Picture 1 (cartoon, one colour):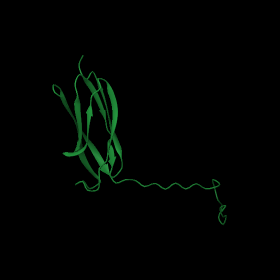
Picture 2: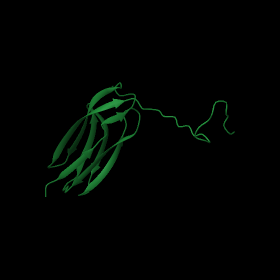
Picture 3: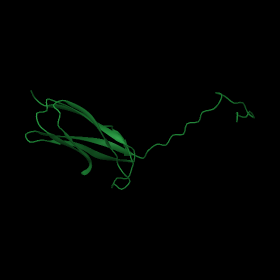
Picture 4: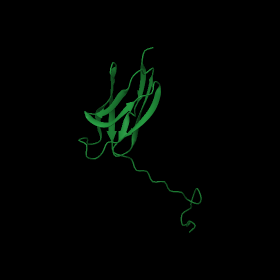
Length: 118
């Protein structure tokens, strides 16, 4: 049977936030080394030994990288074994992390002058 794979990565990647790339490989007959690169900078490497595998691998773009958001970059996944290899490239958007603040009140609406519980 022919080796098949699917790689999934987010289209928007936030700086200094842990993201995941997930890969599913079927009918693997050898050890495969996977490398994730962003504009030629290695983000993570992993070795796959199982015949059929689904695995999510975390990665992070640090402030030390040469990327200044917002920008676009090429995310590249390469797989290399003794007899098989593949390469998958995808254009992604790099952005600053979004900080959200959630406020929980003791009631849904306050009228002017009303105070909350202490």
